[in-house]
Image (cartoon, rainbow, N blue to C red; front, side):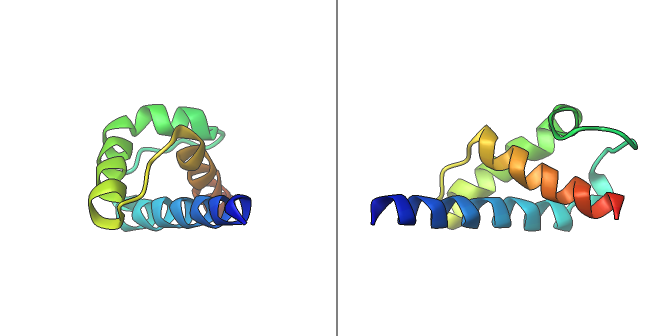
Length: 80
């Protein structure tokens, strides 16, 4: 049961981070061919603010794994 709850939490965190990225998309820096790790480095300040929002607004922990998955989703959307 606990593993199922952790998986749900992970999905929720990724979804929320992805939604927050969508909200600030005009401020995000991106170049074609950029991978998610580079995308996070270039936008480090925004990811720090997203981490704070995740904790303050949703009482959820932020991790690099969650952010990488959300960045991957966001970048895949740009490439389509």
